[in-house]
Image (cartoon, rainbow, N blue to C red; front, top):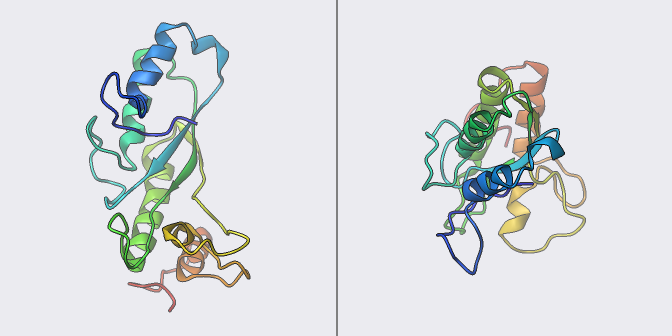
Length: 171
């Protein structure tokens, strides 16, 4: 999957995802893939925060899509294989649990209603088999022993077309 990065040209730490994708097209890769998998993490931004080449957010996927269209690949779908927000209480890149719920549901709406080219939206991560005791635990939808977190219950309500519980979910 194409992971979003903002590495400057020549960086030893990585390559900007948009530059990488364009280089793939320039090298003739278009006929060798049927869909493009991307990661679309939101960071601290809502899903409708505008896409920008110098920002990593959920909407950055639109820039990837624009690049596909510009290279004649507008008929290929995008698969968002990892997406989401983190709600760790002390991590500087996290959002509050109520924001995570709101942003997640809005992301589903955005993909369903605005991005017909995005055929898959998979949030990271449903569950870890054991707590890793880091911020990573706060991407999950259920605990290691399968206890649903509020985000799981709210996404379940959303998928059924039910009214959501409101700020903070069902806690």
